[in-house]
Image 1 (tube, each protein chain N blue to C red):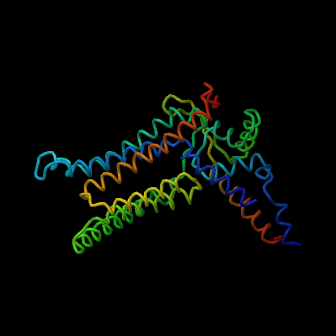
Image 2: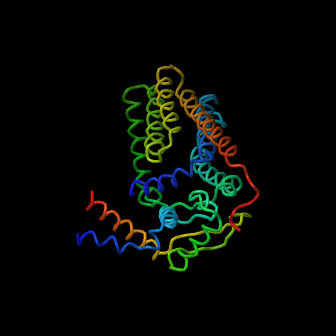
Image 3: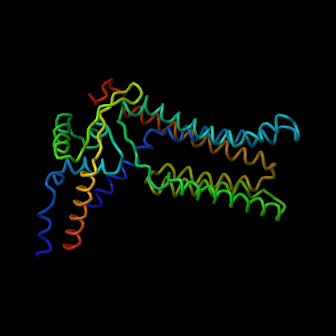
Length: 212
Length: 101
């Protein structure tokens, strides 16, 4: 009985990912980060374009996160809620301020360690592999395993293989990171797009919201 | 045997399968609309309405008509009393299962 109740809760969690909109918008954001890294490598060192691009990272990340959230909300209101209903989720521990500060602290510490290790070893070729492992772990542990959604295992495995493969190329760091984020973003958008098409096919809009 | 008699105290309003499903769904979210509950429970509109009315009359569920953009929604959420009732029900059921396992 308790198992059945847990299954109900699991289904509620899975509902957020049912339409693939999060992956589509998130994938677009990851693709933009890829363009950022590749653009930085492509532009001449010391040029105005490169300086502008370098200083726009924070804007890209914060603005992208806000825009992604807004876009997902708008799309869900137009596509998902009229078809299969609206759910407001519990904020959960992941959104508490202390959790955010802790996560930011971890991210800054890891970045500092990576820079130190890179300078010490004299090479950053391993960075795409490391990024692939982090992305793979995030997709597999935070999405696939905790929510029971199989397609995230595929995405996570792809990230690890793709990141490690790029580590063995001798591409400049900007291009290898650009390729990692770019292709990962496209893979996420593809996965989201296929999921959305299936969702729309399986849940045609009847014109009646059922909320009368 | 006396330990097992606690199961007769189960909240019968929640114990009914359809209402148990509705309450369990609502316990894991802040709120959900009528359409979502209907699809997840597989109940007809009339049946779902009747069960929601019973839960609302008992003070377990609050129902509000609202809008998300231009989309009209009938949003349902568990009240604090409803949350306590669901938690107590699950605890009683878990105790019973543990004692009879």
